[in-house]
Length: 241
Image (cartoon, rainbow, N blue to C red; front, side, top):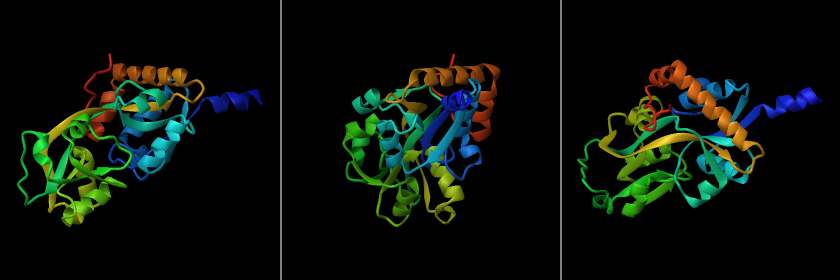
């Protein structure tokens, strides 16, 4: 019984969502970021189990303390997140901006110039502070695929997402729209992604420290950079020392 209890304590139960190529149920190793999380925990002999859910439900599960944590989130610095979640060292960096219809020449210097545009965002994902401050007309959908489909038929003017996520979806899951849609060009925000653990779970501090230590070891031995480069990801802005 003691051995079974010890084994159970070394299992980390995480949720995640569909955000390819970073993480997703149908990706090799569950996606590049999922693989990094698993490898980092392995340094401390933790076994990771991941369940993939829609964004809003995944966030609800971790905030309620029903699971240990979520792969992966930008730190929104919101009161709700700060009180319920503990954020790890950054894993990688997202480039957040817009996709548009290729034949529409949409350019801007200030985000406030986009107030008349219908902009698709994903339910459950906090928008960058820059978007919130500009008070833009954002319309939520279940996921990025839904938003890109709406963009293609003119129900949206822009889709707010990460550059690599949009590129992956257009090349692999929406190839019929690849010619019609493209990246607008402006990077609205660079956002570091973190493992976020629930503060409601016993021992979250120990688990967070184990992850951070493992990630640091991967940075030192070069395996983190190797995995990030293999996947074509961006290294975090705040490099791990």
